Image 1 (cartoon, helix red, strand yellow):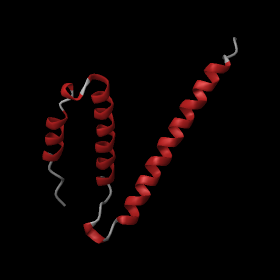
Image 2: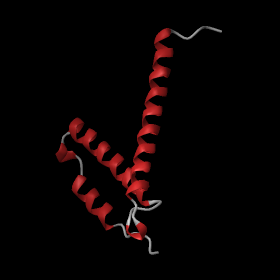
Image 3: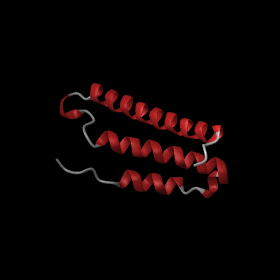
Image 4: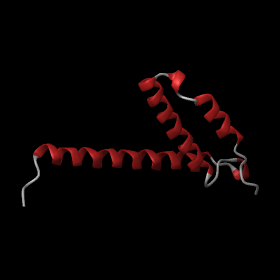
Length: 90
């Protein structure tokens, strides 16, 4: 069996570091929301995930906007759709 090249090993190492960084970011994000929650008026389980999804969506839209131009990204309609989502009733 052939050995991996050093660049392949380096690539896998970088991917692993990126995964660890995302895990750390998500953990800190969750911890911050847990601390901010005050009684029933704070952000609770599930809502923090929705905020992370929105954050990820914004990052993707920003990347695409920079790549193909903002006029090609329907960000206003996507934002309206996202804001129209009705939260589950308690």
